[in-house]
Image 1: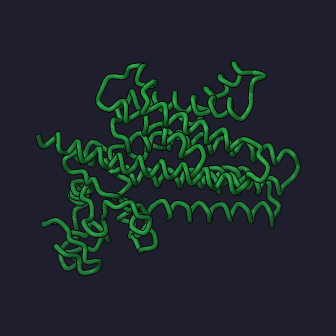
Image 2: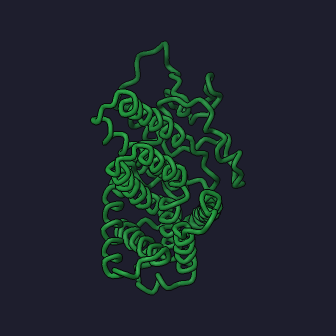
Image 3: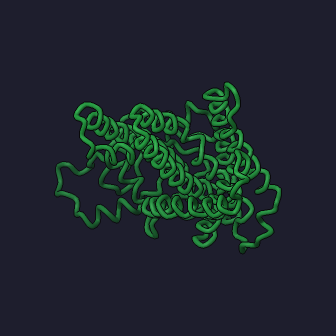
Length: 354
């Protein structure tokens, strides 16, 4: 059934377009709410056949960002991951998804931050300061996280679980990092900071991935990104509060601005890489400690530690060009893992059919 509005090919029997929400029965009785939901849930795992590609080209991956999207499309995304809406592995497409919701989330966060900024800077109302710090700290990490969520092709992790991991995983990883710092005491430097924080996030990622049995590489990317987003946002909020208490309002805005700019290539990407590497060695097998010493995991973890250490090293002229380079290196690794994750889905589909 081809939609007259967006020309999307819908499955036979649906009463509305799964892409734009166009009602096919405008002249008939209204659709029953219950049947509407179950029909909606039944076809939620149907992936549009148009604009899909296996080529990892930026113009293809982000081609839907600037297109018009209905609220129904967003609702369709937000109900994935439940027992009713998680597709079977045989129904999952191993082609590159086309995320777009993350851009809308960023615009909403930007508008909210602008409102708090006006309240603080122009109206001098201190009641807006907590909102300014919270929204400013979470805006970019959470936007990046939504991107990873949209790239999770298996669609087996609901958004409420992702938010849970952000909050609990973020604070848990920070507490574990503080334990490592307490052990190090006077031996804290850029290298030990990188080791301690990345090891803390790795322990937290492994805990969440192991007990929830998220076995796909793309699942590891998403869970890792959720923990990294929580870590990054809470850390930024702390630095912003310090800047505020120092009495320098400009330093507060600079802290939020620069940490927001570099957030996608920082803790979010690093923890995502660690999670993907662990899922790659874990798979369907029972967890064993020797998995953490396999080369496939160690080389990714060491790469993350080295990037983190260089990120914190006070090299002359490093900022911001060095950080841009490190951020680019991190995302090259992320896209390589996305490609590996999609390839893994194809291999599992073959095994499933056999």
